[in-house]
Amino acid sequence: MADHYDALETRDPAARERELFAELPEFISGAMISLGWATQLKGIDPGSLNSRAALAKLPLLRKSDLLWMQKSRPPFGEFNRTPSGMAKRLLMSPGPIFEPQGWGDDVWGAARALYAAGARQGHILHNSFAYHLTPGGFMLENGAHALGCAVIPGGVGNTEQQLEAIAHYRPSGYMGTPDFLKILLDTAAKSDKDTSSIKRGLVSGAALPASLRQELSARGVSVQQCYATAEAGVIAYESEVKEGMIVNETIILEIVRPGTGDPVADGEVGEVVVTSFNPDYPMIRLATGDLSAVMTGISPCGRTNTRIKGWMGRADQTTKVKGMFVHPAQVAEIAKRHPELARVRLVVTREAEQDAMTLHAETASADVGLAEAAGATLQSVTKVRGAVKLVAPGSLPNDGKVIADERPVG
Image (cartoon, rainbow, N blue to C red; front, side, top):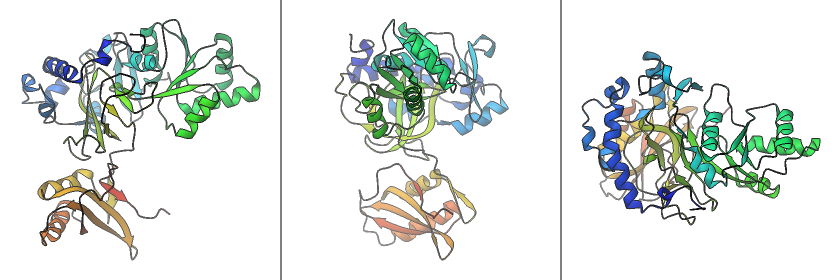
């Protein structure tokens, strides 16, 4: 058990699936006590939600929808089960989007990610995630406390003060963005402050290119990433083998085609959709707006849950063409109306100082009228005329892009 947080991480995948979907109907039934979820899931029988196929029929809750729902039904759009006055903290993320923190241990599921990154009971961890209004600092601190770790609440900025605290308390681990860890190490080197106690880190909130990971490793700090959102907590995390991100045990994760709620095949890039089992603030088919893809196989570290490739960009590729907004959902609708089309990609360019768009569509069909028919549908759905180019199956990039804006900038 020393290598894993608990036995849940090494369950047979089929057993995990059975147990999650055995729990889901009762969880959703409880969530629907709140007005927000009762409205969102109106007409749904929770007892029928015992499989991925059944879950996939539920509507998505997008962050953009959550924003206006919170404004119309403050403070949380009535998606919370725990009343605001009984929450532990009332938090706020950019948008602004508001989130409650319940009183339970590790309510955001961060302990598992910290354990995978090497944190253990009795360790001292330095936390440089923000504590001001936003949940980041509390999210990781909550998980660290669940493990029995002491936390230095460094927060953002005040680099010199943070270095004083690190030199004095000698933490073994770091929590924060990878960028700020580099700033701390750079500043420490210039000011002759001792940060040598920090040997490992759990980072998030910013890109971790291979070059930065290698630099931090060369300076004595091995870092692993986690992927989290304020609404759902830690969704996935790296283990010591650093081969993809392992989905948290409290999450059901789906990858859907951007602009739709339709799940895609493993390996296909799409939008991350999560259902989290948070009793205070349930999230059911939350569309994160982030792109990723499921990796095949089980992690060499022995954890058996689904792995994803990590953050691969944003799913909301809405753009304006000839003064009209074109949305990924519209492009997906064109493909739905023509079943002969597989992967599609709308490419927006400039020709003769005017906007132009071409729908690239994979198909094995020999129907000579398919391009013309798809072109008519393209204009009908988007209200903008465009060309259609039929291409061979498998020839379009697997990057999750439904709309590629290739117009020059400036």
